[in-house]
Amino acid sequence: MTKYAKYDYLVVGTGLYGATFAQRAKENGKTVLAVERRNHIGGNVYTEKVEGIDVHRYGAHIFHTNDETVWNYVNRFATFNRFTNSPVANYRGELYSLPFNMYTFNKMWGVTTPDEARQKIDEQRKSAGITEPKNLAEQAISLVGTDIYEKLVKGYTEKQWGRDCTELPAFIIKRLPVRFTFDNNYFDAKYQGIPVGGYTKLVENLLDGVEVRLNVDYLENKAELDSLAHTVVYTGPIDAYFAYRFGPLEYRSVRFETETLDTPNYQGNAAVNYTDRETPWTRIIEHKWFTFGRDENGNDLPKTVVSREYSEPWKPGGEPYYPVNDEKNNALYAKYHALAEKEPHVLFGGRLAEYKYYDMDQVVAEALKAAERIR
Image 1 (spheres, rainbow, N blue to C red):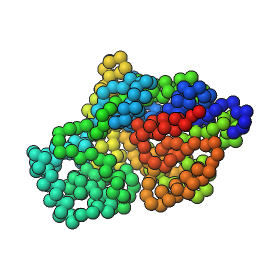
Image 2 (image 1 turned 90 degrees about the vertical axis):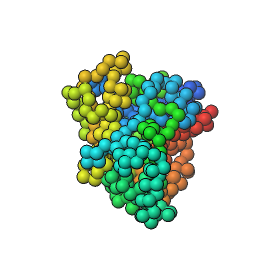
Image 3 (image 1 turned 135 degrees about the vertical axis):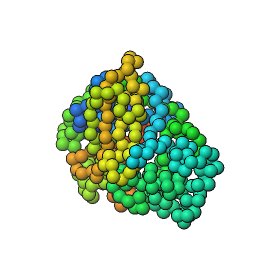
Image 4 (image 1 turned 60 degrees about the horizontal axis):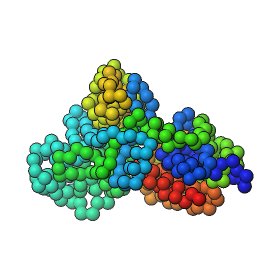
């Protein structure tokens, strides 16, 4: 970073955080260069066209928010459809509704009223002797009872995180909605949808007019790139930025097996979670149902694309997805954060740079907040 730098900002990474910050900086009259390690923009929200279908290459992304400011902002750059996330759980061929609701309780226990469902859950919680949940297993049983925990939570969660539910913190399961209604909407959010034309179109519009260089590894060319801008906005892994000085942070990664099938309908839903421990994948995504089986022009799509997702431990060189925010890793992140606080002319932002799980609306909100400081 030099006094006579060509750009005001160098944005490292073109995911939602980087693209949002770049857009706001340009809108405020600043010069921006965005660099991207991959051969495409968009980070993990990147979508690509296959047989007319917007395929979510790095896993399913459904935009949902209660933040009206964020919703109004993203709608400047994309038109969102009215997709509602209503996943299905498959336990050894038995199908259950997700989120856990009255359809789930009826299929599991034959109950037909909310009072009957609550009574069943209370009985199973008391039978398990749980008062103050100390881990994910106990938290889940407190919320939905032993039967639902054993069939619909335990196997899926242990595949997802690679460890026993009794070894996972209770807060993880609090993301799962439990409803004593027949509402199949997974997200309790005022606004929800998928960008028409895919997330790539949204990010393209955010980056309109911003200079973007693909296939550029910032950390391999750090000195040269730093010299081009007054300020760096870094959205990559914080431990990598500091050359793993204190050791690598832990993540869970995901491997995808994607195939195009010569059939118009494979599973009848966008997402089916496989909750038994024996099935090696965690879920199957059928991408066309994010757009109701039709392309941007409303035409029915004759083929389909499905992706099986396999949760794996992250290894250097792989793609980090979910931070393992246990006590050990949070303490390690605190050391890196202390270094980041002392780093001049560098803003660390986003899921990897902050070692924090963010929903997409939270990423956009944080980038907008950071951009407010632009002068």
